[in-house]
Length: 230
Image (cartoon, rainbow, N blue to C red; front, top):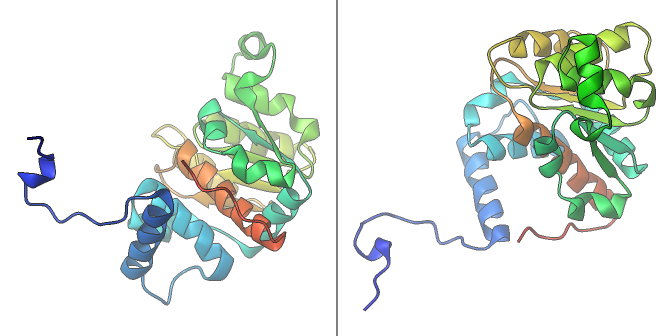
């Protein structure tokens, strides 16, 4: 006779087992653990809640900086079929095309740009920053997502200070110990529409989560429903 592990160990398991049930149950738990009044409401809470869900960390809400201006700009760009530039392939992988294809949105990871390694070596910088600098003239109306590399976020702020056309939205959530918190603080002080998570926490997954939440909002405005995850 075959026994499941749970037949031998006493653990209270949640009955949710399908992707839709698990997501719905997760959001219900988050709503219960972060009761109203909340720092964010309406569509901004949809973004904040997905960030919490992605990191499994309710404590990040106090450090999230999400604005209505950034939300409107991001949704408008997605509805217009923008390009989403990501600092890493990992962030790009966190943006399932089942959400973005119906909106005509494309995703371009900077790491996939041709000749990037040579460009970075010639400039004595990281590939992320070199990639960001190489798209400086193509950012207008598009979205830039940075979840891993503080150097890319610092490079973005530098080219914007030099007069590059700003993207519709900057999602700046690099993670780590070297200039991650500092780069996000500079973004917080900037005039450009942005979402960020202050401090050392962040990462490609939570940065991508912001775009997924915005895409869900955009799809709803179009009267579309995203395809459920497998």
